[in-house]
Every structure is written in C-alpha cells, then in structure tokens.
Length: 260
Length: 209
Image 1 (cartoon, chains in turn purple, orange):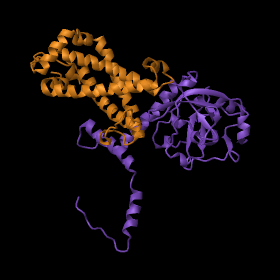
Image 2 (spheres, chains in turn cyan, orange):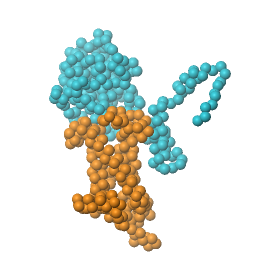
Image 3 (cartoon, one colour):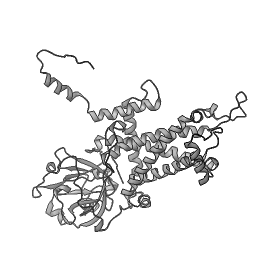
Image 4 (cartoon, chains in turn cyan, orange):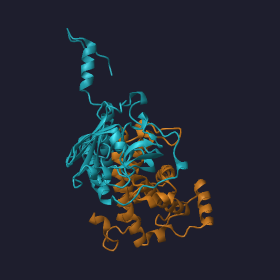
C-alpha cells in the first residue's frame, strides 16, 4: 500500500480519523463476517460470492433459533443438576464478569429494592430484610461458563418458583426478564419453565455468608440448568412478560436458551 | 446423481469397478467439511478458556470471537451428527464395515506398518484396505463417536447427565473432547498425506473409480 497524502483544507486530521473510526464496523464483527465469507467461498469452491457474509450470518442466526426450540423441547423440568458435597466446592470461587471487580456494581443494601413488574398480581417492591425473611434453601452445584470452564459453589436463597407464586405471577407467561445494576444495564431473559425449575433460586448468600459484592450483592439468580451468563447478578428488577426483551450477551449472539 | 449410482452391468461402454460407492463419497466429503468447521470453531471456543498453556492462532479459528465460534460450532454439529449417524447406520446395514475393516490382526498391522514406512505397501487393489488403513479408519470412527458423545455431554450436562457420568464429570468430558479433536487432527494429517501419495485413492473418493 503506497502512502497517499490526503488533506482537506480546514479539517482537523485527527478529528476526521476519530469520526471515521466511529463509522467503521467493529473489528471482531468484521472478522466474524470475514470468517463466514471466506469459508463460504472455500466450501462452495466458486469464484462468485454465492454465500456472502450476511447470508452466512442469517443462516447462523436461524440455526441458533432452531437450537433454542430443540433445547426447549428436550428440557426436562424434573431433571435436576447434580449436587456435590461441601468438600467439592471450588476455592476460591472465581469472580467472573466482563469488567474488573473494582468496576462491579457497589450496591447499598439499605437503599436497594427489588422491583417486580409485568404479569403479576402484587407489584410491590421488596426490601432486603423482607426478602431475607423468606424460606431459604442451599444448593451446591456446578456453575458452567459459556467459555467452557466450570466451578462448584454453594448458594443459598429462595426458590424462584415459590417467590413467583407468592407475588401471583402468571406462570403461563413466556419469560421472567431480569435487569441488573451494572452500568451497561446487564439484563437477561429466562424462559418460564427454567424459572420454575426447582433449583432456580433467588440467591442471598454464598457459602452461608451474605452474598459478597464479587458474587452479585444483594441478589443474584442462580440457575444451575443454564450457562453462567444466564445467572444474573446485582439484580434490581424482575418482569414477568410474554415479550422477548433480549439480553446483554444474548443480543451479541450467544444462544438465548443456553440450557445445560 | 443417477449416473453415479448405476451398476456396472448397465454401463457396457466402460466396464470399470466401482471402488467407492456414491453414498460413501457423498458422506465422506460432507463429513470432511463438517469436521473442519467443527475443529476451527472449536479452537475459537478453546481460546476463550484454554485447557493448556497455549492458544490456537486466531487466523485458524472460525467465528471471529467466542459468540461467533459457538454459533458455528452448534450449527455444524447438526451436519456432523446427522451425516455421521447416517454413515454408521449405512456402514453397518450394508456390511461395509465388516467387509472392509475386519479382520484386524496385530501381525497384519505390524507387517503393513513396516511395509508402509519402507514404501513397499502395494495399492494394486483399492477395494481392499490394508491393515494400516483398517486401523486408522476403524479407530477414527470410534473417535468420531467419542467426540460427539463428549460434546453432547458438555452441551447438556443436566439434561444428559448420564452421558457426563459416562466420562466421569464435566471437566473430564472437556478433556476427552479435546483429545479426540487432537486425534482427529493427527488422523487428518496422515490421511491427507497418504491420499496424496496414492492419488488414485483420492480419485476413487471423488469419482468412485
């Protein structure tokens, strides 16, 4: 590539570059597309672009939706995730997020309230002391991350299905949609059958101690039948809804059902 | 398609022996494509949380990032599983596995490995597999079954918990999945190398004769 001088009078070069970078597609996204495109060309061994990048992406999205349906079909509401003895717990249990612990939401438990919205009879908000009074159970299960690593932990809290019953949720609705305190607005939809699974839990404690900031204080949703990213932390609201409202990672292309 | 499946009796002009029937050829190349897609997207997924002290070069991964790699992996898995299942069923039903891959005797394997390494292994009759081929093909079929089972177990460790239990636990299934991939890559290198050394075997896998 030969260097060319490219000057427009009266235009700041650095600002121009800054602005043009903004209009460029994200590099990893372009790699994703390029991967699909070159592969399409490779597999079909044609000179022309029979399988262009956008159709490869459409194909992958379609298959992912199909996989949602397959996973929903094979989901057994009575199949329990394996449980482990205390000796099997991973120490230290990893802090895991797309940011450092210093950037994790620092929630004041005294101000915090859980908002309940959507298709429920009782839309009152819940304070922490009120939630702590609910009956709690402990589970020692394996957390499996979408990246492939896994760790065994101990979570204590109220089964979500009991809470949904308590607030008079319409359990015929399709989703319970959680929103979190993360500054980017982490959120995640949970299909109703997984929400009603006996091991799905509103978690208030880790290893019998009040949930530390690293693990999602004041409340996380523990779903041992889902991959880690579908276990939202720092939860501030739940909404019972028939609408698919997307999720932080789901919107970026992770399979939405992501059951285990 | 139909021209590929006619029998020798019908073709009076060029009576040539069909070495590889059409179903073998079609499934072979579908499997080759599915395997390559699975390996390259699998490397992408591996890189998100490496089991060992290395990562695969980005240029040899598919999907651009973890999410893209997963989309490819869980799309190509259907191609691999459906085609693989059809291959296993047809291979057993037609007796091809029995006729082509058995018997496998230690003395036969030793003899043919020695012959292969000294370039004295004959390939006059491509319809009969030598013992090196038998071991490699039978072995890779078993590895293929194992990689699908360990993969399914990792995909659904709760719904298919019995499958994970078969391997021990979830992390062990991950290692099994990895080593099966490594075995398939090793096979690929040898397989392609040998096919190029005996070009008529490659031709047979493309046009059947």
